[in-house]
Image (cartoon, rainbow over all chains, first blue to last red; front, side, top):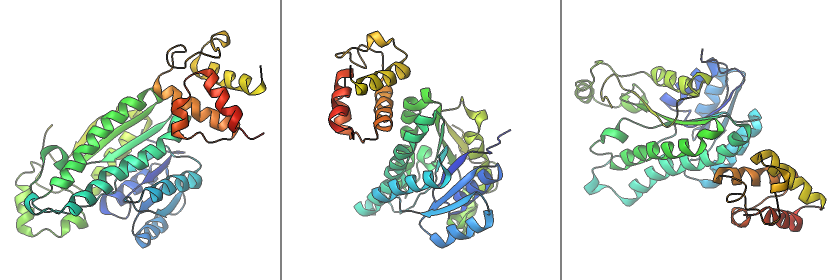
Length: 245
Length: 79
């Protein structure tokens, strides 16, 4: 089950904790992967770790021309693109009263607009080949909201609505579009939290622990697989029971 | 009928699963040939491939009939 041999995948934000785990998991299932992100050094390191069937292409998700170039280069490197994992995302947390236009716009631009642009670029080839898997990494806060993250929550909720619309447009071409919504996951992003903050978070997690990047990656592998062909427009919540939707 | 028109017709027949006789000059892809909006995008992609041309979005939107397609390709295809 969930064999991805012969599939070509592009993972954005692959230099991060969750993105790296997703790239490793897809690769382990047999897929060829293009690692994208802004930190070229981290991408090269992961590429070296994976060995064969791996490419690194740095790109900025707030740059329309760069996004088109990324899609073209990824398709050229692998010969096609079957699986697109839109994982790139940034945060600029602030309470709304203090949130600057720039903080709002930057987060929407990278997390939502960038994802739309890359998906639009990728869908051409997927339509032609009558196969595609688009997996957008959203967040629990896109559904529950989170104080201090109006911008991030709006972008992540936007991804869910966008995915449902794309799913309806593309379903007849055997292209599925789904979201994975992580809860609190142990990554460099959450490492910076104080013990007290972590305790506060865990109080809301029935599983009583943070999730691991590998647990998010496992959900992505499923949605990318042939077995998940009839699953589209869905959001898979992986959060230890923190929110049950 | 010109060679270009024949090649366009072949693509339309194959893609939309219609009879060649239905693909008349004034036949509208959506209203007369049963295409949906995604089909029209795919037809444009197929024309681009077949004739090695690029059909910009604003031009693609104006291609509504078989005749429109043939006309556009005739004036833009590399000879």
